[in-house]
Length: 375
View 1: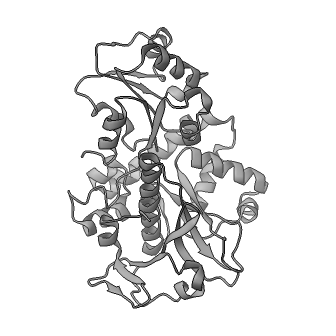
View 2: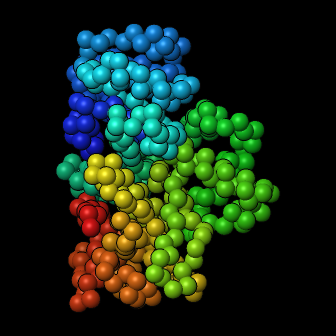
View 3: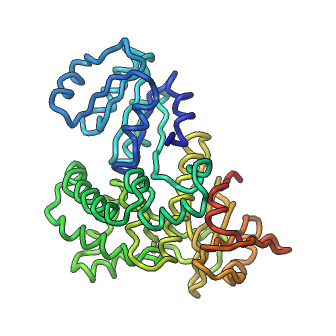
């Protein structure tokens, strides 16, 4: 299956270093190797390859050089700068890595003007819209997640085994590359707690009490899990909304299959992944300023997602597993969301509806297949 960001990467790689980041086993290496019929592949995890990297002795007759997990190399940004400034392009230079998303996107002055960054996510409904029926794609994502290997296998037993080894590799290999930690079991327990709290605002103090840890430790652990692409945060939007809450993020899993609670939480997680993926694509390929939030006021009224572009709300979403009646949550935020597109997504809805005030009620799979968040 050809990945949706491939076409843009092919355009960019003729003049810039390409940095591809994303979750472990999302398909970064497979995507990189599909960019050219011939390539030289070097990974920093291989001792022999590390020597070749130090010597810069890859095959310059090949059109593409792939450098995997290069961020583990000390002073990797200065190294890439020197390669680009001395050798230039061609050959095309693609750098991949599963951890430290911020390191890839905020590389500082050393690589300024020399790279374009792309984030690869697991499959979602839109990416596969030309290959599968939307409702089939969404049902499979809710069952086994969107990571390519378990998604294509489409077997719940296989997925359960894959999920265990996938998370184990992240916690016992990638995590140790980021921090010196001894309490791996504590982080595993934190993940287990988050699996049943998807869609709910998270209190560091409450999680700390559950785990017998300081809230600051919980915040650090959550940051590490974000850097490792296990989870991502959706924070509250509060501008121009009276009595909005200012803190308490919600956390979602890149692997929707991780969600432990009922179908409503899994559907909300799948929607979160689709929205986040689309916004990352708009940032990476168009340079737009985008962010994913949620709306909640002190009276407990909430809209699951709010898309902000250039500092204003462009879209608001409420997600329902099966309730197609008009959600009262939209009315709770009044004029603050009046200029935003308002969409209620329902798990299964044969016929969509629109109202005179602009509110849309849509089938989730059908809507996500044609997702367009350009303001």
